Length: 123
Image (cartoon, rainbow, N blue to C red; front, side, top):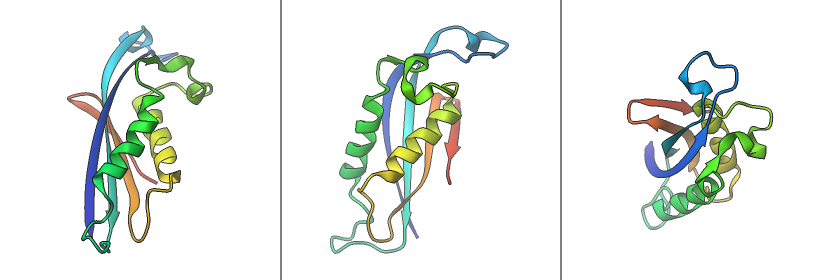
């Protein structure tokens, strides 16, 4: 089994509605996102999937969140923009893209909202 990781970052603000604490106030993060791809078979070049292709697709998704107020986005119309919900939404969008072939499958998305706090989402 092979596993590759591709990371990218974006900056955005949010608040957590209904939270009893500081996170109920507007604040921002330098979000770090890592996509983990797994598979058993390599292509003719000896790659599971090209890092460049995964990073380009991940950046395309993250561009929609970059330098935005997450609470105002349609993606969070019914959900608080928590790290957990963000990880799930990024996973679903990336998994639905057409970049994976052969045995390569998106395994998980990890979202860091700070260097010491992260969440991992997998289906």
